[in-house]
Structure formats: C-alpha cells, structure tokens
Image 1: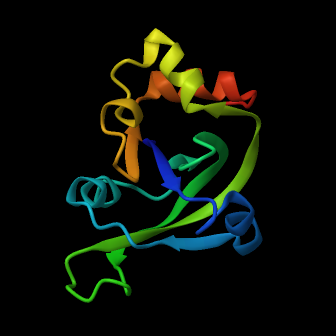
Image 2 (image 1 turned 90 degrees about the vertical axis):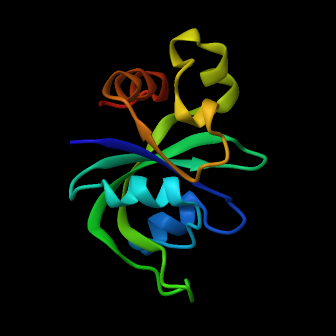
Length: 137
C-alpha cells in the first residue's frame, strides 16, 4: 500500500463535502507531476485529506477506490482523476506549521513542492503524521 496527500481549498471542496458525498472523483488536477502521482495509485491506497489556503492542515483520511481515468473537466484530454472515499477524520488536525517545525519532515513533498495538489507520503512520514493526528496508521 502507498500513501498520498490530497490538497483541496476548503471553500471549493472541504472535508465535510467529501464526507457528505462519501466517494467522489478527484478532478481538476492540471499539473503533470500530480497527475503522474495519481497514475501511480492503486486500489486501497490511503491518503490524507488536506485543507489548503488559510487552514493548511490535515483533517481526514481517504482511500483510493477507483484508478486513474479521464477527467471530464479537461477539454484537452491530457489529464485524469481517481475516485476517493472518506474514511475518517483525524482526531487532531496536523498543521503545515507543525510539519515544518519537525525536522524529520525536511524531504516531505508538501514542504519541498508546495504547489502540488497530490503528493506521495513515505511510509515513515505516514506513521509519524498518523501519530501526530492521534489516529492509528
């Protein structure tokens, strides 16, 4: 199993929206590296749901339930999407400031490539972030 982090602007699509919908496609990605990350996903992979912009914090956990397929919002036909399912919220939101303050995360793509909307999360980072969030890995 691989781990990921999905970034969303809460005013556009929030954790509450994801929970209400249950399963939803992750569309609108227009960065090739982020799209390649989604192409690498497998069924059952887990991800953190991250509120970007003003909140900048991990707020929930999701699961990949449908593999990469064409994005209906992309007229060029170059990009795709995956479907994710809301699993559960975190007990303690983990902020970007918390992550940056912890030197163990110096190579985390969330910090190093902050503009990417979908980034991989190494196994050890997943474990540490789950611990910080008060949830089981």
